[in-house]
Amino acid sequence: MAKLLKVEDAVGKVLCHDITEVNLDKNFKGAAFKKGHIIRKEDIPRLKRLGKEYIYVLELTDDEIHEDEAAVVLADALMGENTYRDEKPSEGKIRIYSSVYGVTRIDVDKIVSFNMIGEPSCPTIHDGMVVKKGDVIAAVRIISLVAKRKEIEKAVKIGENAISVKAFTPKTAGLIITGTEIYTGKIRDRFYDKLSPKLKELLVEIKEKVILPDELDRIREKIEEFSEKYHLVLLTGGTSVDPDDVTYRAIKAAKARNFIRGNPIQPGNMLTMGWIGETPVIAVPAAALFFRATALDVWLPYILTGRRITKEMVAKKAHGGLCHRCNICVFPVCPFGRG
Image 1 (cartoon, rainbow, N blue to C red):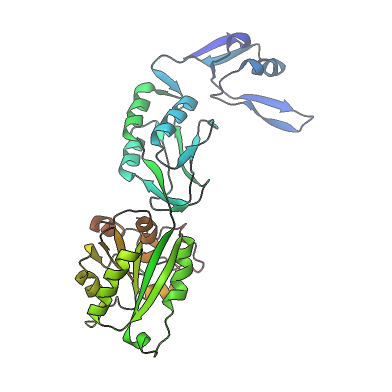
Image 2: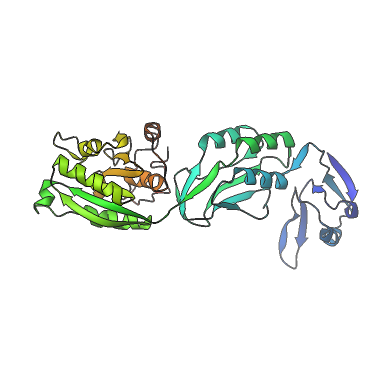
């Protein structure tokens, strides 16, 4: 409810409208005080210089909350591990940041429910995005200058810990390069040079690599050995649909759990994965040699931060899983793999 008060009596009240200032000496015309500003004692001299002896303010009832307070309350509720926020709102908005180098964990269902309430608004970046310390991952505000406290309280309960970041930690990997043609020296391996810098960027060091012929038992034995020695096992050279492709069969033979062969992401349809104990085992398709971003790049950040991939998660990647093949690749800041 708007009320006209003397400026001296308006301290702590909420300004109902912008107050314009014209300063020819500074060649300035604009808002000296914006709608929603909470008037402070130190604002009084400036307001009087602008000719404001009386001012319209908003008086909040007990069941109402100002946009600045609401933004802080909502942000604090939404923030999970490895996040921090602006100290104070700016124009009613609070931004949430990552405090580590890691991968976003956005509870999409919670965020949708949060934004369905009405007043609360929180856009985020995508779940599964690699972020650096200081990157903005969300922004919170309410739509109006004032909201009902009950709405904000409801949003707080719904959005609790919906936004977090899982930090990368240094890991080791074993690389199994398969293919009789590589083993016999007829073809030179190119996967190691391609994968090593990609993994290093995600804090993974390839500690050991081995080249094996297309023999199921030898590949299986090496998978089992590497899964006990390293945090991650990667296989290359055999994820096709050919009947003599033994790579995926070797992973199954090693009794990998949560075995998922293929995924609806192109390039990288034939990426295969499973877990032996807590160790992820990934068969990398040939597409990773030719394209900057494939299914491997979509799933690695999830996997390296301890997220167990489900078949439902894989199926959902069909939406957004087709690469646009842009002339200049800007992955990961693009729709690819973000469905």
